[in-house]
Length: 220
Length: 113
Image (tube, chains in turn green, orange):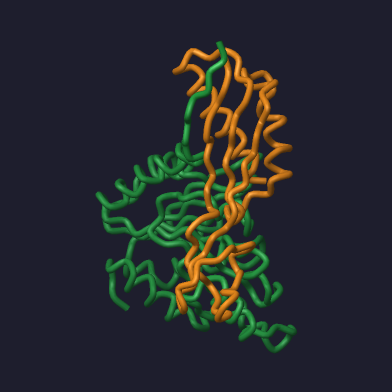
């Protein structure tokens, strides 16, 4: 006989349960974990390379690289001096909590470290998947449109900090940075926002201070 | 296309509950999707149609129930319908309300025998 069963289960339950396990692992090992999200080409990998270069004397840094294919980014990070593990997502357009659990098992970061996750370049899909990170950082660059925050509101709504990268290019592009900042606040009024140029280090001290303050693991 | 991951999760949840309740043929799955959840419904339907192939919900009616967005103005306290995350308070025009409803992603029920 036909019957109807109440389910009431969150579609992302499996991911969220693993994210909770990750959170516990991070807490138990006193790791500070950042999830970096952006569209492709915003300069995430360069930003991470620069961050490793400038902070590696203050804190151990580990990187989890997410890309659909290739291990090119992980190779770049290793050259910059940090331990890295590459995840190839294949058909998937985002990292999930299970990917991160496996990557952390491989990396085995030492206690009191900074772990940076470079998510797949995509402003839509990764917004929905909690990886268990402490904080989420969305990166946009001045070579993109000012209206990214309102075109992809879910990502900005779920982030804790927005880095506007490549500000060294402002003299050469038509980009109204104040407009971007307004759009960011429209989507999330308490979003922290910083202007940086990873390539030449401009504004990066503020970013380092933010990591130091939020993690409590080192001082600037 | 995170809808593909969502579709695979929906199938897994439905099959799991069917197993537990000794249902071998699923005739209907009710899925609740909030309007502010960031899900493209057409993409989800498309993904579901391929995810159900060779499962015991292959011929099930996949019923998607929309849940409208609801926000509370942080300035004047009004509760109002939100079409997008940028919806402003219709009374005082303040932006960025607190989202009360509309981010749901749930398998509500399964039917079968």
